[in-house]
Amino acid sequence: MQTELLSYAQEINFSSKADNIHLVEKLVDEVCEELHVREDNYGNILIALTEAVNNAIHHGNNLDPTKNTSVSCTTKEHKILFKVEDEGKGFNFYNLPDPTSPDNIETPNGRGIFLMKNLADEINFDKEGRVVELAFHILDD
Image 1 (cartoon, one colour):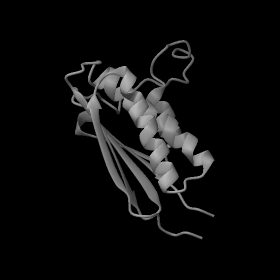
Image 2: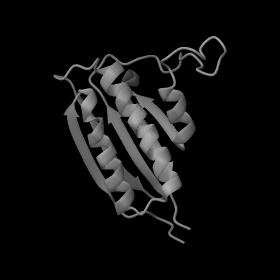
Image 3: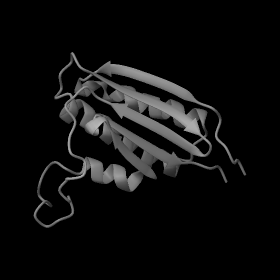
């Protein structure tokens, strides 16, 4: 059994345009292939990271192509760590509506952070919400 992941580090930066989400999908593919991530973990990583980047582009940077979004990936022991950062104003991540509440079921927005919290093993917000860190515990059996 593998007790520690290979050392890995990569970062990408791109303008905050919606069609740049494919760069994140490519990064996830590269990371998961390089680190031999199982398919069930791959899906969680892809969805959670895509949601984080989508939020950064749309809500953080308001689709402003002059503002950048950055995504970095590193490994530490048995974790893959992703950090997504935007140049927006941030948000109050302590005061988010519950998307599972009957009042919010039909609301078209507000599920991204809920998904991230349920798919990642750890999630942290920093810099008033302009940075989200997602950790995934990965061990090969």
